[in-house]
Length: 284
Image 1 (cartoon, helix red, strand yellow):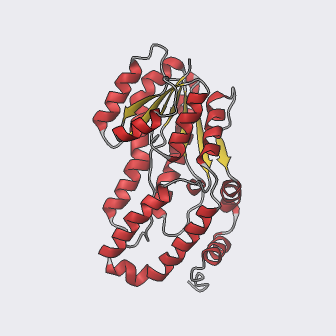
Image 2 (cartoon, rainbow, N blue to C red):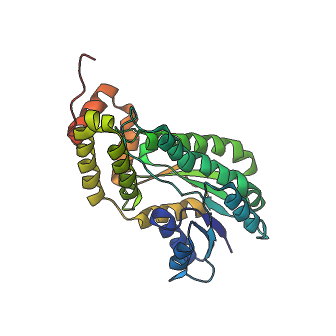
Image 3 (cartoon, one colour):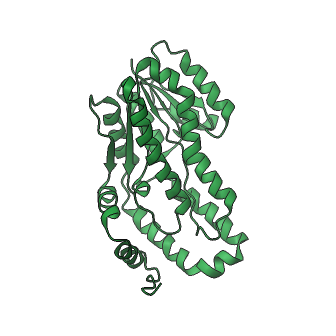
């Protein structure tokens, strides 16, 4: 029986992935932060699915999860370090503790989890499936911290793919576009608090960030379900020769492929027009 650890399985992509792989016959270790999340995940799942209380910002919790996985005689066939968050706010006034938290959760904690379970991955010659984003190839205004973390995941994925190739351990990056999850809703709560506590942010960026929110809400209406991402993750785990990257959603394919090759001045103008932001100053 194939085994996999999926972190951030309380909701969204992580939960959809845990349920899909469970239904496909995998032994799924599902990392969640609270016991109530574990109970909700058990409901409707098979007895193969085993929730693990795992806060990826807690080194002891990561170590405990790795110890549990070491007890699996065949090792670990797959790791999907999916836990993450998204904070919005202009970089000029974004509190540095929020910036650090974004990088810690979306980037450093991912590597910490990978390092902890690599012995189990090596025993099974398993796979690492990293969750990037079209936001790991193209950056938009007011989500610079999130983009920094996803650009970092892209770099980690590329480096690990090359470093682990001699052992036959495959590393795959998944790049979703707009997905119907709670990540941006939770991020808005953080952004609201920041605006309340930062008069300078309100003064300089109030009207622009309002338009940004309108744009995000519009995008969310057309977001695809996380189950589509889960389906692509299953392909990445099971295909004999998986691609280095899988893009999920038409928006991801357009943005990730075309964004890097469009001249910056044109790209900035298009983004400003699309998001109804002030146009870039042509003389600057």
